[in-house]
Each structure stands twice: as structure tokens, then as C-alpha cells.
Image (tube, rainbow, N blue to C red; front, side, top):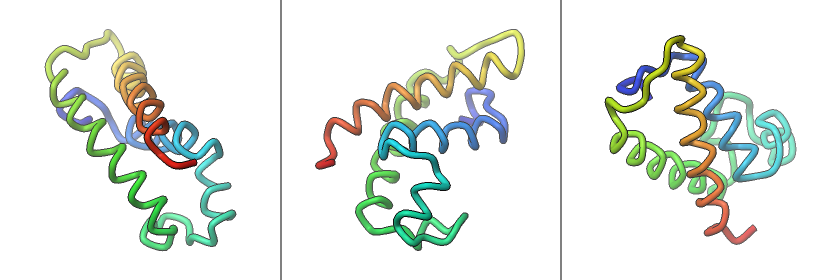
Length: 99
């Protein structure tokens, strides 16, 4: 994300987006419903951790492929374009998951 111009807000939004697409809930709900401790991904069930890792790996490959082509006039536009890639990949990943 950073190589494409994303900032810290972009990272935060990407986690929110992928959680919504992969698990059909908010980040807060995911941690509450699985007994995970907030901000400690290693406390989530292994299947959840694996889904995140798979999606983040695939998203990073897609963003790497697009490096230098994501532009925008404002930081918000850049972040929105990166988040759109994460959302699209998350939808694809969800199709491969057993839930």
C-alpha cells in the first residue's frame, strides 16, 4: 500500500473493508464474537488468521502489480483507489472460503 501512496488511514480502512467482505461483520464484532483480544490478531481463531493472511497476500500482489499506476489528486482519492483493490480481492477470496 505504501508503495502506491497509501497512508496510515489507508491501512486502517483496508482492514475494515477486508473484515466486512471476508467475515460479513465489523472488526469489533469479529473480535467480540470469536473471543479475540482487540489489536491482537494472534488471539483470533486460526481459520480467521489464515483467511486474513491469504487475502492480504493476494491483495499485496495485486497492489504490487499496479505499483505506479494508482494515482489521485488527493490522499483520499489514492486511499480510495487502493481500498477498492482490497475490496475486490476480498470478494474473490471470500468465494474460496468455506463460510
